[in-house]
Image (cartoon, rainbow, N blue to C red; front, side, top):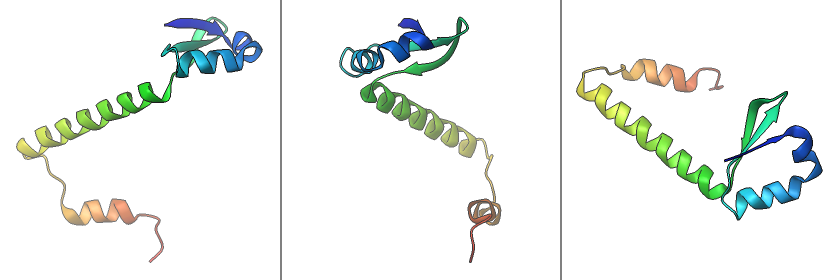
Length: 85
């Protein structure tokens, strides 16, 4: 993982995009010396999203098996909250 300042990103934006996209580097962007954001390639993002989905599914199964369910009426109300009829 590479750490760079915001000013370095501004000066070499396309270089860092290419490093993240094609070099598979994860680039931590620092603001005042502290991590503020991360630049990573689309493949890494997709893998992270797949991991999040798998974790959420496992947690949902655990909750279901533990009897931690939500009544359909509550789910429906939450899904349609603010949606016009």
